Length: 222
Image 1 (cartoon, rainbow, N blue to C red):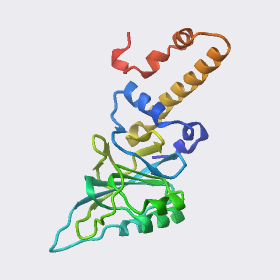
Image 2: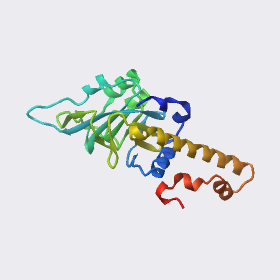
Image 3: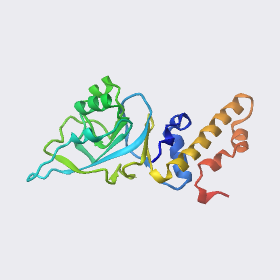
């Protein structure tokens, strides 16, 4: 994927606007049940994916050494099968990731040491927090393969965006199309606000800008 998404016009887009664009294009991508745990910045970057599995007691593996291979600007996407009984991310990883300039971490599961993540302002999204380690309970099964964020599939290199409303994932081959439509929604919403502030009714402003057609799936347009 080219880094076109680094343009300021795309960097300002919210997950809500992107989710609407995904709906318009008939694409999944809004990851249900994930919320921000720490970090104040909106994140946007290509996915570095890691899938975990229950530990093989004959040949146990590691939990966090993959971070050595993650580049600055990437978003780490961890699939721990939505488990909430043990973690795959803690304070050491948060501090190392912040130092390396990694964009953020998204976990289909839980995290721990959240105070350390807050202290270094590292963007972390998960299904919650729980203190029990995943060490000797889970291990890395694969890296940069397809993973799941619940009802959303994420491949290595897909564009991942996170803010206060949650997380969306955009297939790499659809990223520019999705962001272009999200930008149209963003511009229309700003124009609606300006028209209402200038004296228009909300209904008139929405109709004038055909706002409803920007969010409705292409297949349902009249």
